[in-house]
Amino acid sequence: MAEYFDDLETRDPAAREAAWFAALPAAVAGALRAPGWRAHLGAIDPATITTPEALARLPVLRKADLPELQRQTPPFGGLIADPPNSFGHLFTSPGPIFEPEGHGPDPWGAARGFFAAGFRPGDIVLNTFSYHLTPGGLAADAGARAAGCAVIPGGPGNTEQQLDLVAVYRPSGYVGTPDFLNILLEAAERRGQNISCFRKALVSAAAFPRSLRDRFSARGIAAYEAYGTADVGFIAFETEAREGMVVNEDMIVEIVRPGTGDPVPDGEPGEVVVTMLDPRHPVIRLAVGDLSAFLPGRSPCGRTNRRIRGWMGRADQTAKVRGMFVRPEQVADTIRRHPGILRARLVVTREGETDAMTLRAETASADPDLARALAATMQSVTKLRGEVELVAPGALPKDGKVIVDERPVS
Image (cartoon, rainbow, N blue to C red):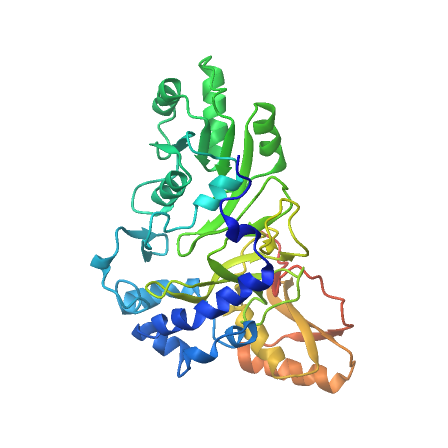
């Protein structure tokens, strides 16, 4: 039995990076066909975007900004040059965000995740992601079929009817949220139904704690996790090594400091930024709003692409202070104006009945003039007064958090 989906998964990392950046200029040129991307990227020459450093100089596009862009220029915010009728399926996700389906038999890049989770030709898969309006169901459906599996389009809910289908078709695999797989197992136990046909599962879109993983394993189900979004499809997936998630082959992933487009050092949490290389549906530095971190080294499974720790929370750390929203971008703008600041964290608290905020800033200098200048810049940027505390380099936790809200929950 083949160990890998194809040879791309084990190629030399230098060859992979060379292939990415050879294809990137065409993707950028494809983006510039669309007026939204032209306005966002500005006057750039696609032929010069051939290195990680050149890519990192391009502005990020925040997923949180897509609803307003699409409201102004429906349906896709001016970010896709081709008309809607040139795509196979058209979706909407909460936001609302409108998304077209990509091209090819596996437009969401899901097949590699299924293969890494042990799915093979001849498996029957119960797909419990929704087929209604959102792309999850059809994305998983296409990926499973690209991996050679037959698919039961179950969708979410209808537990008793799904168990009836399981009794007839005896699927060996499950795809959906881990919570719903647990619901199916408990419902089958209550009705005395044997569903030991399930031997493998690919789960996503919800937390997958160790307790659930162990529960599935005790029932003979090897469950693996995948991470993705409706905008770009499968970003990364677990393998049999179970050491982080291997990044998918068809995209460039960066981890950047929240509120900026600046890549963070390996191992440090930051926001996931994705670039897709399809000139017909390009995505250039989309900040998806999730936190993760790169893991060092290669996966013991033999796949050579980079690994991330998986989903580590949301990067959108906006806090409302004294009636005003304070955003990570404002913290980044504040410290950018003071070259001696290495990193910073804004801590929001309560003092009596009043919101208070303190900017803790790493610097090699304890100059009180610097603290006063930082406080003045923070007030200028946020329109709010706050304190500044200068701390030694390395004093702040490396957890990807730029704004921490420590106010008690009433």
